[in-house]
Length: 156
Image 1: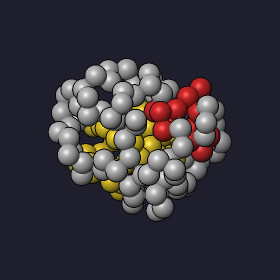
Image 2: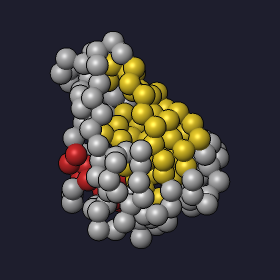
Image 3: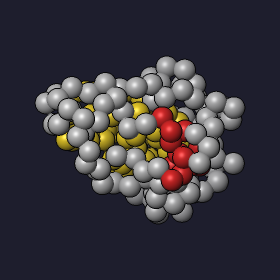
Image 4: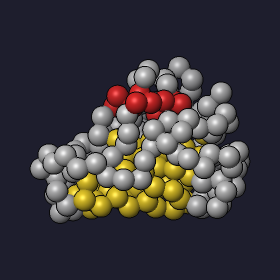
């Protein structure tokens, strides 16, 4: 479950989205072959399409939410081009992992490794607003999670 963000709880949101890449990093920690399927529903006011993408990133540390987190890279990232869709990440090497999501309302964010533009809706998978929940992965198995993103926190 993803709950809306507020400014106080989602610290350094631009840092969280500033360094996304779509390539897996390869350090092994005993979860070889683990897969993660992230089902995301965007309930905000924007239209998700080819120009206005929904981005999902997988992180192996909570440090992406800290001040200065822009130097970190996710272990995987994907695009979803509809208001409700899934991103699958195969052969993840770390556990636990954390999920962040961003919706590019401007349609100008073509490089997900760059700082997102003002107005980008941001969120994390978790039970409490602004608190990313760990997702435990099992070798050889697919873990499914369901998350929601809305417009309650937008990058200033």
